[in-house]
Amino acid sequence: MGFISNFREDLRYFGWRKCFFFFAMQRILRINSKVPWKVHPTSQVKGWDKIVRADRWAIPGASPGCYIQAINGIEMGKNIIIGPGVTIVSANHDLNDFDKHEPAGPIKIGDNCWLGANCVILPGVHLREHTIVAAGAVVVEDSPSNCVIGGVPAKFIKTLPNYGEKG
View (cartoon, one colour):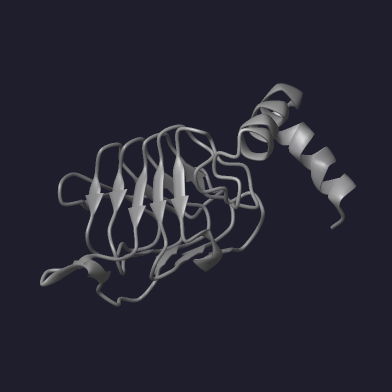
């Protein structure tokens, strides 16, 4: 898609006030200026070039207060909602040399996932399709499809119908 059609879609999705706000913060004040999508000025996106998005509406960092670190990569599906204060960390520090990061597989977030406010997703986690992560949860292991997970550490809470079906 061209710049003009992307701009029109952004206006429909965000509205002109938010589009101007993001433009002013990223392009004029240079906050998160290297990230090619809209990022809230109170959020940080590190390693944005290692984030693979299935569509342009998976927007890590658009909500306030997010911290996204993609040293080992993040793969995002379609139709993802990321709440305020979400932390996604794809690499741990080496325990014997804090200047190095330990290699791990990328974090994978499937289609139709919702990450609730202030949840934390840790390295190597795979959230399968239609996973809802409760607010404040700390996700340390993979989730099944069509479920709600929550708690510290996050555990299975309940099964959901397939996305789009009424349960």
